[in-house]
Image (cartoon, rainbow, N blue to C red; front, side, top):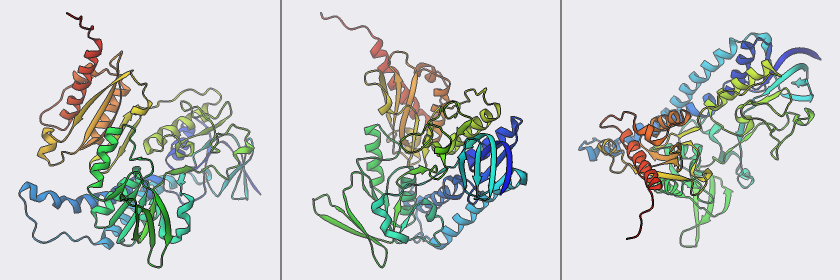
Length: 472
């Protein structure tokens, strides 16, 4: 049995783990980075980057669909070469993974250890069954994995998750997508625009990141215009067939519908990779999912010298959040027991569909009824959006009814990724709606739509402040 001693053991070499390792080293401590599988972060291998490569191809293929409205003509049809599309996705994906691997290889060999990690006692970690690591602090950054419903598992090789899609050698003929969340919507629309027949199923009306019913319904109508979308599906069964899979579901007329697809894509969320870590041997408190209970401002688990960051804590499963959390966890592990809160930024999430979806700050469902106002704008007649033939969208901004402070927003629309950043900055700066309206807005730009929504919110705030009118 090999024995190693370190100050900080970091389990997981993804975005959060790498950030934690660097922060611990910067804090003057020795750190050991433990990874069980191939290096290369979820984002680079199976997440942000390969999905955007597929989306970019889909956007290029879809662009001619609007040409006629501009008065342009295309001689001949656009032909999608599925083999070439997927070859580029894999080739560019591998380049992004290579950049991450270069960074890992730059870490001294004595600071890296490969193998399955398991806590065997407080301060002791067994790696690969052959190396015992003694540590004084630990950072858990083991990431997440796709969560697959039990009723889909019998499909075998005809069941895929986003990890598998990017290994396809060519595009399939037809797919059924379960789960119109971030992953499902991005992949589903991209595949549909590349000529794949897509059916998408949701339960209970869930769609994207939205809690605002009006924004969610607008998005549902928009995407239903491109592919088959059942936002409140009643699936009767799924079966593997010699050619692929069959899905049976309740049709709108009350009968039974059947579809044959090549693959079923499970985009049904991700679960934290904490099983098998031996967390019960650390003596720390766990929630019902087996995830350590921690302080999101410090990433510390109780009062113990254990910290958790990134997708492993099942909170904000986004790359920029994982990087921030990893830095906080690593820095606090280095300075333990003198931990202190780290910088937590304004919540921001973007879905790279067309139109794009975004949520900033508080979602509507999290606001106290009667304590906020809503400012709204439709992008259907917004000047710049209409000029570009990208005039589909709805934005709702939320403001505190008493103070006028901006609280959050939910939106679908053109350039939502950029509008969301402006709103996130305003939220982090604690601006009020009147203060936001004092900022410059150029003409003609999509941001003028945001100004319209803010003006609507400002008018509603003014109405709240106005004294009641006396009866004549």
